Image (cartoon, rainbow, N blue to C red; front, side, top):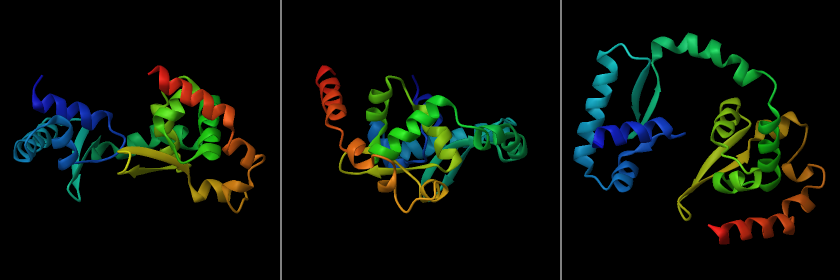
Length: 182
């Protein structure tokens, strides 16, 4: 598999922009070589009237929809970002509210399924935010201030049974057992 193909795949699946350093570290490639690949990929998308584009901002790269398709994409996503939340989205949001900050892997373990699309949807709606922990080299999710304000609360600690559910030992035991199995 070519470096160009690998970079394109990583940009496609990433929920956040990736820096040259992150790409170089993960792919064990030289920064100069990656820069050349990114310039090539960007040109490929620009010259072929594609629906996707690579943007560079603050030395970070992200695969996005083409700017010309912005109105079409916004219209399509309108229901996704303003309609009712699905039951799985509500479950994930509740877990994030009570257990946050929470890593995606932990959320996946609690729900028993991959939550990537749900996280993306909740991020798009502005209900959760993502923060990167350099110590654990992992993204963590928490509910946003807008979410708390929308509920009319002063903080997530005011959620019903927050203290009990936030520190629920049986859930911690289940998570620890799941970690040991992996």
